[in-house]
Length: 175
Image (cartoon, rainbow, N blue to C red; front, side, top):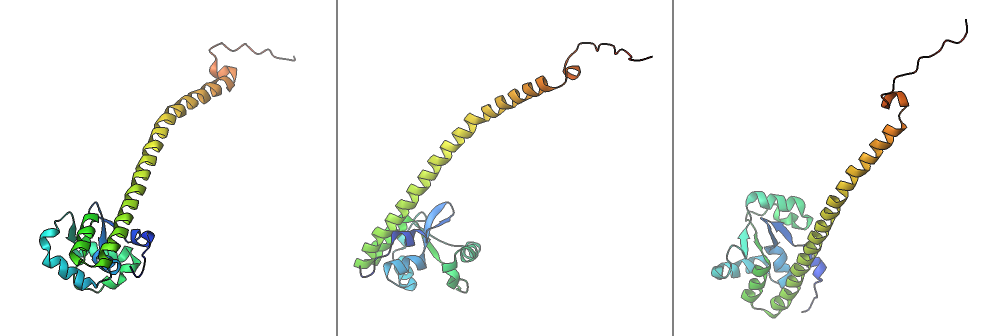
């Protein structure tokens, strides 16, 4: 490959749409070293290789949201066509459809980026699960500590407020 693309730069271009981790067609075209037009031509010629879980086309609303949230996609703002997005499996299939040495080599980096993102998400889920366990564990401690503070406050209050003993009569001093 004439130019090595770091996995980090690829993973920054992975979007989360419709519950899927995907890459937009123009970003994949850059990685594979082809034009977006050529990439989409190959997809149309091999439509049966790209079921909905491999690739789908964005709606106008999704396109507007992507353009608003991703600075590197500002060039799509005035495009009349709706872009396609590809899942990890779609990106691999795309490399085989493009059938160039550069596309096949670049697909390895794309797959590594998807795998790395999956590992990060798994780590976050594990951390979230542990945090939830700690919250549940110490929630009962909060209740017990509050009960201790309430008991201390009762002990600290003046005798006539917390006691049921009758008050002793006060004697007048003087004449």
